[in-house]
Image (cartoon, rainbow, N blue to C red; front, side):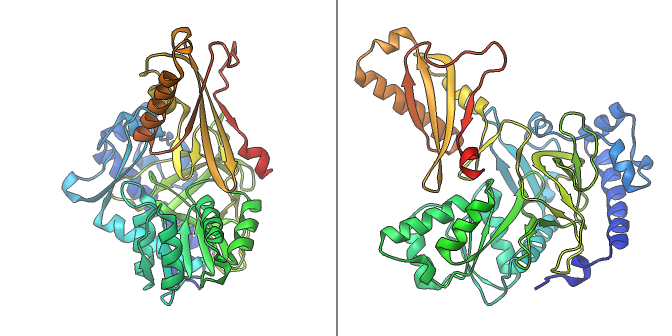
Length: 436
């Protein structure tokens, strides 16, 4: 089912004409209202009146995540704060979150795009949508919630955690659509089995999964264990939240990105050169309808490619291939963004350890795990076991408090972790070998 036939099936020429008009308006607006962009454009020697074609987008400079951090909290907002009706935030490397604001119209747009996304996944007003994305500063829960209500479905605002209750509610309430991270989806299936329940006997028929990378192999496992169609959804807080792009249930082959609201580009992450359609590189997105915090050529760091070929579903918007990785060092653990530098900032504030650590990311069953290996100093290493245990608990607690992610901690003796004359190897991600 297509939610908005007028826009989702626009001819390519009409899409590009609309994009150009909205791009020109957006660039002119941020130049006039956002000091950062006025200075950013001036340094690049470009101005809004020079944007006469879509190709001229390449003349504009990139926006980086660091730019949002440098302008924390409201420096990139394009409207006065009294026009902002919603504020969300995601974690940052220094403990300061990346802040995004939404006007009333932005919320309407978000709801509309999530409605399109639900419809693309095969959901409609007759569905009971079990929303297990987190509510709060994280955009996932509320973004999915508003879209579910927009299509007229019955939405259950479960949020994350409380797994036994999740299973009971899904079974008793007759949930037909499940929204959560892919790893949590599999965990729900395993937890149900431990309760003597086969989740395939529930009424679930579709799962909409995002917020973390997942492979085709994981999709097959989800579909087999839950007896559903598993659909990949893409979004990021800086651009909108969930609903930037989604697979259609007809093809499950690439995520339709809503081009009447976003202009996607693929660049070489090293040179910044724009690559032709079909080539792999870093995804760059320009928002062309956002009022609260429009972003020009935002580098997502996600690696993918654009698929311009027509889709069997009838939608004319280009598709993104499933994300294959990132061009930076960010990890995604159960839907939470984690940078090694965040862990480092915690460790450096704790006495008794050396500035040497390693993060080991793995998958046990179907849930991501994070082990933080930390070298203790000579004095700490000679302490009693009880003191070592207290130190380990302190590290776990501080990481949990700052990042919201649970980890295990392994304290190792001095000079145990490998040294490097070049860039230190901080992360060992064993999930990559499992997904290959």
